[in-house]
Image 1 (cartoon, helix red, strand yellow):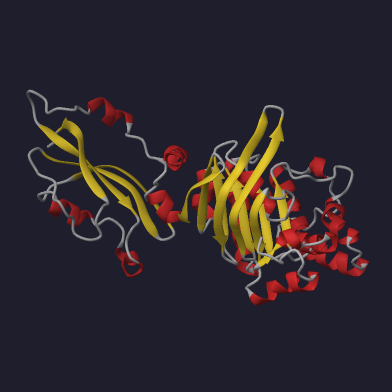
Image 2 (cartoon, rainbow, N blue to C red):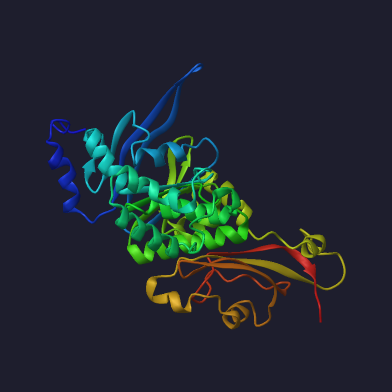
Amino acid sequence: MPRGEAARPQAAIEAAADRRAAGTIAFQGVGKVYQAGAGAVHALQDVDAEIPAGSIFGIIGRSGAGKSSLLRTINRLEQPSRGRVLVDGADIAGLDAAGLVRLRRRIGMIFQHFNLLSAKTVRENVALPLKVAGVPRAEIERRVGELLGLVGLAGKEDSYPGRLSGGQKQRVGIARALVHRPEILLCDEATSALDPETTQSILALLRDINRRFGLTIVLITHEMRVIRDICDRVLVLEGGRVAEQGAVWQVFGTPRHAATRALLRPLESALPEDLALLLRAEPPASGRYEQLVELRYAGGASESDLPAAAPDLARIASALGGRARLLHAGLDRIQARTQGRLLVAVPSGIALPPVFAAPSPTHAKVLGYVPAYD
């Protein structure tokens, strides 16, 4: 903390938000140490990152990587042991109790297990933060009605949580998180307790909220599919440290850290079983065979190339001697960029070109040999 920061008037600290777009977050050398029976546990170490206003930012890592600790520093549910957390340019460590209440009304939060009050109706659960804040009843009724319509729960106002599905409970949690019209929404494993179909519907709702209101969404998850489907940028934590960070398409396309590669492995397209049974490391002693060539795409085309960035099969065949059979495709599109791999069979003896015609794969290599077909 710079000298004199703690002594700055409260109004000056909160007014710093006016100098930036609402919803910016910055971590500067953030560390968090917990004292346990076995000694000090370093949950976070020297974390530096910036989250632009209006973005959807993912924090991912294996269990114990420090995801929850980092997320909870944003609304000061966790106080960093060192470093600074800035919200809209203001160091939130300098906020007094009243300032902290105001900060938390600007930051909504949704949870993995919903945290709903079972004895209260949907309407009462959503209205509770407004009642605590002393908002007039008419305004509460108007705002709660609008939010329940937004999250698709119109008609469920008088239902109790025990009669709702998991997805409906999470929608109640989202509505409750939005009652103070926050600039930032924190999502703590918000889809981990949901089935895949419900997860997709909740992610679609979060995307709609982000686009409609321009609020910043920060989510933690252990599911790379969630990051792929919704986030603009991602930070990978490993052992409390930043393993890597960047645009989702860059991190997914060319992961640099072993932890990232391990997290991405479930998304990789495996070699089909029938091809794996046929594949030989060396050319067979007899019979006709072809080379099995892997072409990988990392999405690295420039912005101007993006409309044409999909693999061009005619160009691939031309580059591989005029004949190529597409045996398998495992491609995805992340932020308008093609990523993944193609497996093609080409006649034996064809040398792989050092450079493919654009849009080119990141690399090409011979995986082995498979029987040829007429």
